Amino acid sequence: MKTYLRLTRHNGNTALFLAVEMSLVSTLRGVPLHIHAEGLRGTGKTTIMRAVKQILPMITRVKGCLYNCDPAQPYCPQHKDLAPEEIQALGSEQVPMPFLEISHSAKIGTIAGSIDLGKLTNPSKPEAALLPGIIPQAHRGIIFVDEINRLADTSPEITDVLLDVMGTKPGRVQIEETGLPVVEVPALVSVWAASNPDEEPGPLAEIRRQLSDRFDLVAPTGRPSTPEEVMDILSINEAVQGTDRELSQQEKRRLEKLQRDLESIALESELVMPEYLTNFLANIYINFNIESLRALEAIRQAALLHCALRKRSQVMISDIMAVLPLALYHRVSPATLTEIMNTVNNRMTGNEKKAFSNNNRNGTGNNSRFVQFFQNKNQAQQPAGSSQPPRGNHLTCETAPPQKARQLRELIGKGLIKRESDS
Ligand SMILES: [Zn+2]
Image (tube, rainbow, N blue to C red):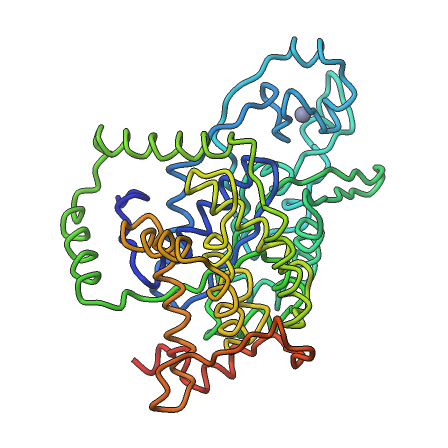
């Protein structure tokens, strides 16, 4: 068994590691962060996302509450009207943050909720009650959907439920059952999804654009790109092969340490975005005609989280630089992204640039290697001989061309994304 910590981090997956850790911290802080891993088969997207189950932070809930009521803010049909003393009398317990999966064959009742047949048919005390579905049961945690593009294509009903859950923060879910009044409960749930844009029915942005935009961040996931990284993966595979053993004490301790680290980072209450940076982002939004305000909100939220993971309390422009590609990957063309990155880069002071590249060197800021991953991709699009990405400072431009979300199929055609059949 490979633990979360033994999964090899390389150029192709650092964005995903960053995204899942930011989302865990954000969810624990009470604000969902929806993330989508896009990549070809065999890039380990789902392995990384599922391995997070080993490091889920703990949450405190009203004892036995299937809706994971926070004792300080009970909200479920059973507990919302109780007095604080009554909640206290019920007791509380610590459980790992929920991590539940939605399968493509699931019925709406299983996902949202249904009538509790057990209680209804209880001969001694029959009563009509609701059984919370997967989403209400994942309150304050994670919902994982694999092959989200296929789900959006074949299950419009489940897609609509997800749109509601992801429409606001926290989202909401309606539990409907014939003969009972509709119950709506808040759903503080981060939706994690994975998809392969090269497989049927194609990229999510083309199947259901609205759903694609609800993801705050997209983490493009690729294969390792250097022989050293491949050797690293092979050596770890060899070390764990044939030993379907329990985790060693040392591995358990390291996983627990990471879990506690994430908890303490989430508890950091003061995270500040200086006004000049908010202003700067607003200018980017206007000058580059970014289509969705959600993009801006995602950059802001992710920059605060990136700053928290670096154990700082005030956002720096380097935090914005690190998260921009993830928040804009599915929202602007690669050329626009390059221009925006250049604009941000030009705004960084010498010290900030130094901090940014130091992060790169000491390994904790692997995401900046990921920025490079993007830039390489963009350069691949340029004519031979031009080694620099196009320079441009749109903050001084009055009219920037409107940008449409990039069509991934088109990119595949241009060779920017490698098809499995190419290799
Ligand atoms: Zn409750």
